[in-house]
Image (cartoon, rainbow, N blue to C red; front, top):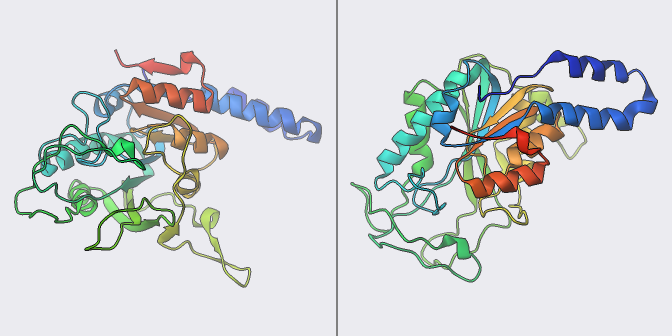
Length: 311
């Protein structure tokens, strides 16, 4: 089987060690090793890999799929390279239908997605000095019904499609990026935000609001708001779409308990797995690009035995 199971023996041993203060340093190492040994990365297309998992396996899913028409990840049949935006939406929904199946009944789904503008029927895009990764050998045509320079509205198109597919759309969170990428445009504001949608499998679900409460100026706590101001973070050796750890942390903490399993079907450089381990959760990451699999494996410190390639 391609999935990982968490056995109770390691955690029973960990629980006993908590009785002795002298073992605290060893405890941390044992906990991390136990969590890592029941985590893993699978190389392959997300939709196909997910079919090998049983129903109701993961507590939460936190992910950011490739954005439509913005990056070339160098993989054949990659999501995000579709000619039509509707085809992109349909392909992503198919993946997330499988995510819905493998989530527990009280599970949550945290989806980060960015928007883009029509290409004006330009067929390629050059790199620039500040952002060489923006270069693309292809550009999708302007979608039907839109005009050159239109904002496409991909996040909400996808959110509504997921809602129609049976997901509960519970919250739209604004990721405000104070250190956003500069833009040369002079006829609109510079984009400095992306969306995070909180979706759920059912009407009632696990959500630990206490774990992510915000501090007020008076020192009290308040329910977390829907605008999160978090700087983008670079990771040496990673691809350009690195998740900030501080963006993932509240999703992990609110959406799961210690020892739960966190899923990221578009694993990239592995931030979701890294943060999950930091907060006492196991993880499974799925990534189609072998280069990013290697980056994530080295970043998290996984043995080769915990990295599998779909047959």
